[in-house]
Image 1 (cartoon, helix red, strand yellow):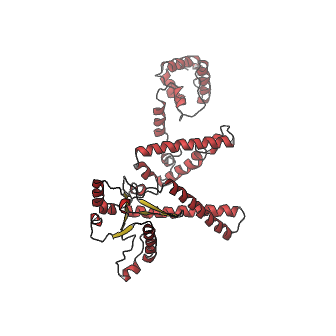
Image 2 (image 1 turned 90 degrees about the vertical axis):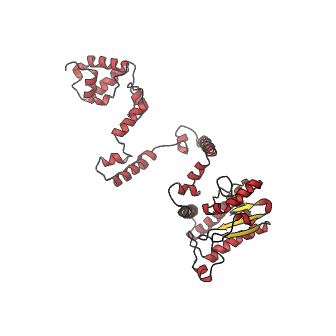
Image 3 (image 1 turned 30 degrees about the horizontal axis):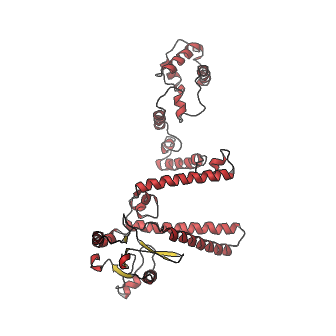
Length: 377
């Protein structure tokens, strides 16, 4: 075979992927072409073996990895391996992308599903993360050492997240499904957001009960006994959680509706001016909570502790108006839970009674009432 240039060599054998703009790589490749000129009419399998041998003689060793790794490109003379990988991804879609399956003849919808399935079965399934116990045991640690390493990693990540959210409190609200911002940022209205949140709570409670029931079924209990044991276990856990919350005063961050905040604004402006402490669920304050033993706690829309005053603003889609006619009262349903007016009112009276027992005066305002919040004090 007649003498060829390095560019012509790469046109014949593009799988070499060498960067001939790199002087050292170009020089070694020129030596290779001269040395093995008579072999260049053979297949890439043969040429590839000779090329690796020649480069190793010049103390350049190709790592045993694919072209999605930076080291693959670094040893071949590229200074910007990340750019090469990005370029490769654009031109050669991977099996977890929908483009890969579209090229194989699948529709866009089917291709998306195929890509996700591949990612979960091939990529995620076979990948161990520092948040998994097996990650450490596979590194040779004993089960006890692995647990310690895992706890350290979890603490480190939690601390990092806390610091990040302290700098930007809005991030926490967007991340947690039990915050209304999680839903409004996804484009849902507040009303739909609260409904989805309520459904999520029910779903999670149901999942917990299923897991607990299965736990006792696995221990050999019959279905009825297992369900009874699961309910006791669930109540025990709930009490323990509530006890910790009361001790740490960590009741979460309840958010008031826009409508109630508009109602309370004149009162808030007045209290800010007079430098009087108050509680309300807005961006900078938190709702007032009263714990009922170690089983439950109640949150209140607006509270002025120094005046022992609580104001409840009742949106009439979730709070039945006591001034309604009997017919309207009987027809009324909670917009999310579908509970009757009698059931909802019963819960509200318990909440009001708890506050009164603590010495608070409770004023209830309904959205249809024509009154300014400032008039209440």
